[in-house]
Length: 89
Image (cartoon, rainbow, N blue to C red; front, side, top):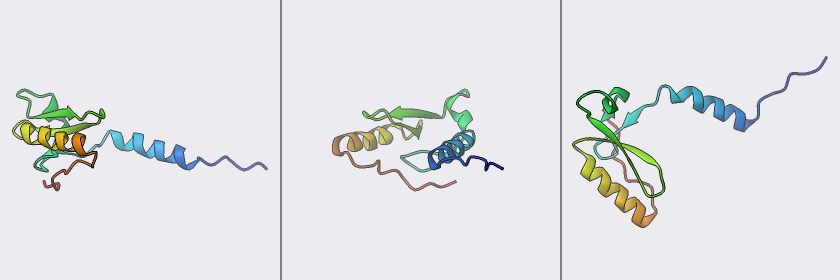
């Protein structure tokens, strides 16, 4: 009797990531506020995605957009990770 093949670590990680994608937990990088996915599409728009020079996207509240851009400018200039605010709900 042959044993069934097991998934590799990379395959398991990809499966877990794709399952979690539907339930992403999004926070503003500037203030840490929880952002619902509908905030990006509903009218009026209350959240946006901004990109760093490396192409990574980050979520920010509309009111925190300037502060978020400053954080990304510092990230682009220094190459350090973004100094995101602590998450709060």
